[in-house]
Length: 123
Image 1 (cartoon, rainbow, N blue to C red):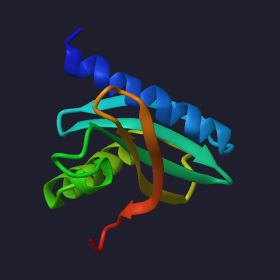
Image 2 (cartoon, rainbow, N blue to C red):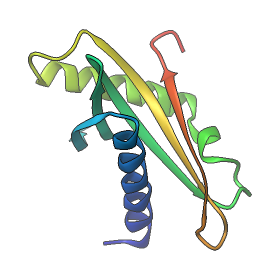
Image 3 (cartoon, helix red, strand yellow):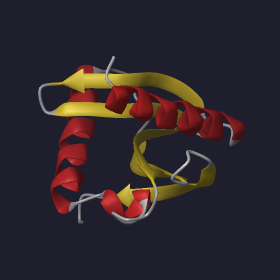
């Protein structure tokens, strides 16, 4: 496994722990289709939540939350649509969130930010 993949996996583990602590249940992780991957699919209060995890070490390239580009937003919408088409019996309410994990240069956790409704169809 590449260093980049291990780094991303560590961010996803932190995000899962954060979501579970907030009362979410994890439905699926790393849903893959041709268009890409949804990191985490979770549910709480009859809402299905697609979660993109962004992790950054240091802030020279900006914060993790600032790393969602318009192209990434469009891809996340397409991925959520693909998931919805492949699964039956999903909750009517759905949204796309971002969990931004910021680490210091030496790897110490600085912040986890959960941005609800970070991506919507009108964006």
